[in-house]
Length: 97
Image (cartoon, rainbow, N blue to C red):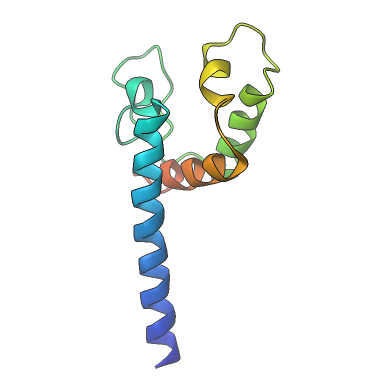
């Protein structure tokens, strides 16, 4: 019974994260360049679906800190909280790449 409860709780947590991730991906315009599923509509932008979560977190923090002056991602990432970054990284990590 405990195992079933844990599986249901994990499924609910993923559903909540998916909903939050999708909401944040639209709110912060990730989908504009990287696509709704993390697959970019243009070769100009990288696909982020299925990327390693720690990598996505580190890159978003890098851009938020404006470590690369003039990068267009700086303006997007500066708006993100640590929680937003974690949710977005998890969301795109779990998308099929």
